[in-house]
Image (cartoon, rainbow over the protein chains, first blue to last red):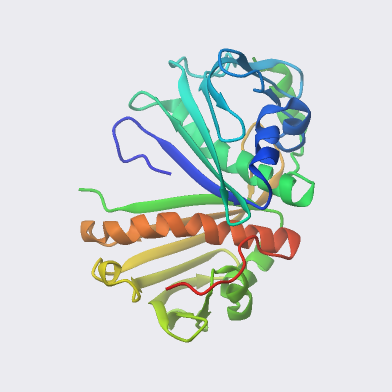
Amino acid sequence: MNSTTSKPVFVYVTYIATTPEKVWEALTKPEISEQYWFGYRVQADGGRGARMTARNPAGKLAHDDPIIESDPPNKLVYDWKPLYRDLPDERPSRVTFTLQPFKGQTKLTIIHDEFDEGSKMFEMISAGWPAVLSSLKSYLETGKGLEPSWNDEAQKRAAAGA
Amino acid sequence: MSKPSFVYVTYIRTTPEKLWAALTDPKTIGKYWLGTSVDCDFKPGSPWRMNFVDGRSADSGEIVEAVPPRRLVVGRWQNHFRPELEAAGVTRCTFEIELADYYPDFGGQAVKLTITHDAETAQGAPMIEAVSGGWPKVLANLKSLMETGDVTFQIEARS
């Protein structure tokens, strides 16, 4: 994680004991993402020019962003602008996933950039990605993601979101 | 000029007590820390020595704080096996363990481990750059060990 430049850039690397193909599926298929992405159904398997969509556990559309680059199972790039109405209105930022075979496993690098200086969204994604990517690693290595509790308050927020 | 710093957060399905044990038990450290182990009693003021499996010194430092199962600070952390990193001087690494929400919208809790590795001066930048590459591997291995009983990277001699 790095925020030393005036335009902040988030970088996170993790290693997962599986193939790049399995990580790719998990990043692009909603029936897999919902098992680790805290219930979110993320679809990003349409290729360049298609849309990356995400629905929250209440079914509300949380993302509908363009896929900029899609090179399965190596690289995936999409824009990022959540549709939640209570979030700061900032220009779309950009998410780049790079998947590399590394000693029998997958090195997954996420770079989230193109934020404006002082972005509030940057703080939110910096807190969110480590949780999502930790859960992704748990899911692919143990068959179980990290469990959200979806307590009453979280459910209300999910239903009201977007 | 700001001091070089690296921060990494991971969430692990375990308890704070088990994670503390994994960070402070030399035998467990040897399983996930990429061919090194640590010789230390983890009491404030004690020397902290990280050695390769063949006994050579990799890094050394001293325990500044040890508050089980929440907070561990290793100060005067210096590399000894790469001259350009040894020349970068001493750094400080803080381990914080908490049972935390993943993220406000997600609900649920796991054990959150935050590693903050700081240089004491701008001169330390090469060391912080080096640990920025190493921590994700060590912490991926640690998380896998805690959750599956096995590591993802097998132990190998590092030089």
